[in-house]
Amino acid sequence: MKRWGVGPKLEKDCVNPKGFILRGYQTGNVLSEVNLIPDGVTKYGYPYWHAHRADFHKAMLERAIELGVQVHINSQVTDVDFNFPPKVTVAGGKVYTADLVIGCDGLRSICREALVGHADPPHETGDIAYRILVPAEDMKRHEELHEFVESPAINFWMGPDGHAVCYLLKGGNLYNIVLLCLPLESSG
Image (cartoon, rainbow, N blue to C red; front, side, top):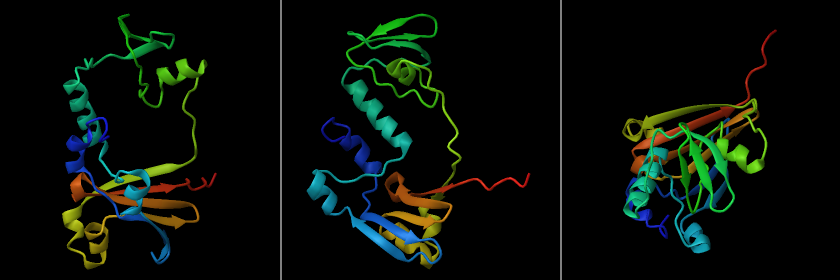
């Protein structure tokens, strides 16, 4: 992001976690820890950042516009031709030719299917994810939660049928909680 000139736009909204912390689900005790500060910078040359998806998109869009990229909204992709030069057809039949096509068109991706050469519909994994954003300010009122706000880290609580992944976003103002679990068996 820094090399592309996106870093300065994104950094103010990011959180630089100190590391990955793996915790037991019953007591929360630390089972394992991987340091990111300073080890991440030493190893990779850049810090590990957590950014909210909306902040990331905004920073990328701002930088692209600065570089002269033309952005077309409400342009549903209906076909992609990866031969040189690549072409993208949108609903209504308009064709765009580009130097580069980045296929990030989601779960029912036309770009992915064009690239792999066959239908590639989404499939059920059986996993369920629940996402919660909690204002960090609310967490500060509870002494037992101070650690999670004052010492940013990526915390994993591992359990037998699921796990939780939690970390700060929005410059430390929001705590993101993602609960991943297998669905309970229906009682037929």
